Length: 115
Length: 252
Image 1 (cartoon, rainbow over the protein chains, first blue to last red):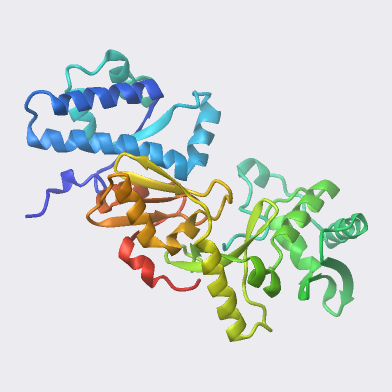
Image 2: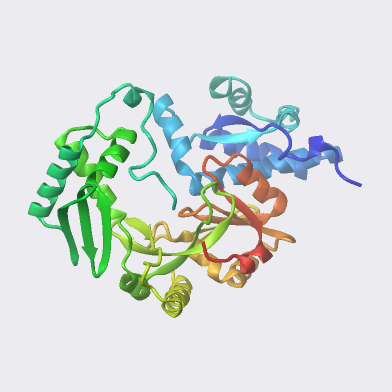
């Protein structure tokens, strides 16, 4: 059985959310504690683990192609630890549905630099 | 390493500036460069030919001729500032990317992955040498014999295997960077089996390892879905290829 298209992160539209190192750490902590904690719906678990993957991919992008993000940071005046974390709509929704996500990280994902 | 002679055209603001670089500007810059002296075995002359003045380079026996008019047109197209300093800087950067002599490639060439076509769809091995800060590709001269080309390529592959690379693990991804020789990161791909072994030593055993390769940038390896995610939003062109396909990559 093939997965429905919404589960393939490459076919989904990935929207960049510009997160600082603190935001990313909080995002990782919240997702990990949700996955390690109580029962999570299997589909939500897939999306949440994709978010963890994306956090690593975002760090890798900085190593392989640092120039474009550096240009954006120069133009906007954001700090050097701000990098784009690209999430699909379902991944973002699965993160925002976590009740333990700190307000600061929630704000970074929905407003602020991501607005 | 198929690029415009003087880099990509400048931004919109620069395009509004319609200064034209003339042959005389290039000639003056070349004359000053000759007077100032250039490095090593390189000899530069400006000769008057039937089709106009030519810049003639003799780099350790490899001769390159180019019409000054051609350089002027390319500089104008690349929006090089038509000032003595602007033209001199453009000429110096063009000289830094002059063809590599066959002897130099045979003595110091390193094999890296590069784009094999102008549309940047296929990868191939290419012999490159370090020239100052830059990595310059070698294309065999018209006098290079087939056995000599093969010898140069095989010793370049041998040197690529000795390029130092640092492995960094980022979750499900492995990244190789060459800290000592920037631009030669993809040389690590001459020994793909070592890459998998290094990843396994760090507890990373992808079922279906895929490489994300951007010429002259660090190399990433991960499972197919993660590699696609990394490559999907890549700002530069990159190639994603299965680990097994590395064995079949030919020469660019």
